[in-house]
Amino acid sequence: MWYLTDERKLVLDATKEFVRTEVAPQVAHIEKTSEFPMELFKRAGELGLIGLTVPAEYNGTGIDQTSSGLVLEEIAKTMPVLTIAMGAHILLAGGLIQMLGTEEQKQKWLVPAATGEKILACASTEPVGGDNQAEFTTRAVRDADGWVINGAKCLICNVGVADYYVVIAVTADKVDPVTKAGISCFVVPADTPGLKVGEAEHKLGWRGSATGSVYFDDVHVPAENLVGPEGGCLQAMFVSASAEFLSCGPVSLGIAEGAYQMALDYSMTRIQQGHTMFDRFQVTRHKLAKMWGEIESLRALVYSTYAQRDAGQLELAKCRLMKIKGAEVSEYVCREAIQLHGGVGTIVDTGVERYWRDAKVMAIGGASVEALVDVVSGLIKAGRA
Ligand SMILES: Cc1cc2nc3c(=O)[nH]c(=O)nc-3n(C[C@H](O)[C@H](O)[C@H](O)COP(=O)(O)OP(=O)(O)OC[C@H]3O[C@@H](n4cnc5c(N)ncnc54)[C@H](O)[C@@H]3O)c2cc1C
Image (cartoon, rainbow, N blue to C red):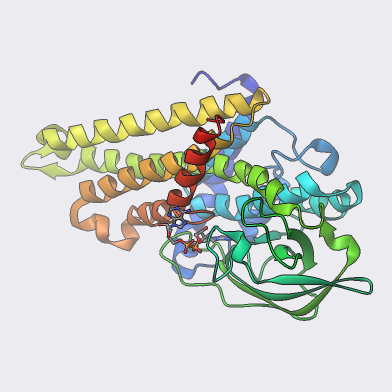
């Protein structure tokens, strides 16, 4: 591959070894129990795979963006949910601290997060409002020495395992519907009185992401837990969320590759009328060729966009396209991979249908692809795509 330098190969080889020896043996257990993959998360932290994009001065690995894409792709081939937990932690929640936090706040929260010593969750989504945060009802009100937060968040990853919740709350009387000014960001320690978490939801995919609700009942945080300007968080989040959307490219690519490899292996070994399926049926060969083509097109998009990031460009629309296109390609490839397996493809223990379940959630978790397409169309109109 054109993007594999010697340094990146070293990172990739270390990741492959981690996946082969530690991640792969845990897949069936996590799928069956939906347990958060704590041991693997901590190991990934020790190996420097969590803080890949965090600068070295904040305990991160500080390597280039392309290497981080390679790591995510490689892990997602085997256990996509581990990359989801890592992304919610260091890209969504950590990204806001990295972007908006003061030096002191970064030392306090980003440094232990970069190695996975402390776990972060990003609590933005609410039961009402969807992607229109102007309708959010979780509110933070000033008191004598800080803020009091009341409200509820839902569908939040890493609940129950997080040490800190990075919470998005309304701080103005009225949020500007266009600029979304009036929304702020707070770090709330998990053991703060009044903060409660619900049970992790039993979900279609991303099993093990510990996704659930967080409730705030007169939760008090000191003034220094406000991250970034009062009322000015959403504009920053629009940019910081781009890193998470970007990461959906390699994660989706890994999911598609995992399913494709299983389908290819099966087609090459399953005997139909005296021949392998691959040799017997033209339609099988053509399906695999098309799946391969979609994967290679996605790979080209992913690593050219990462190359742009490494060159210092942040293409807001292209980051969103990574999630849109990634979800489309991975869902298509995974669906075909199940089809090529026939009946055994529907059996959970075969291990191929889980890829489709994870791909399906890629189209919604973090932002629905429809909402993202809408944002991209706005960027086109503004001449930014
Ligand atoms: C497994 C999982 C993990 C998640 N983790 C987190 C997390 O860690 N932190 C967090 O804050 N949130 C998280 N979320 C929430 C996620 O970001 C939201 O579910 C997502 O943004 C969609 O919002 P919604 O569920 O409110 O759906 P709605 O906004 O109600 O949307 C429903 C549907 O309406 C359509 N739609 C919505 N908006 C538009 C639009 N602008 N244009 C066109 N069509 C539109 C789409 O078809 C969409 O699927 C997670 C969700 C899932 C499923």
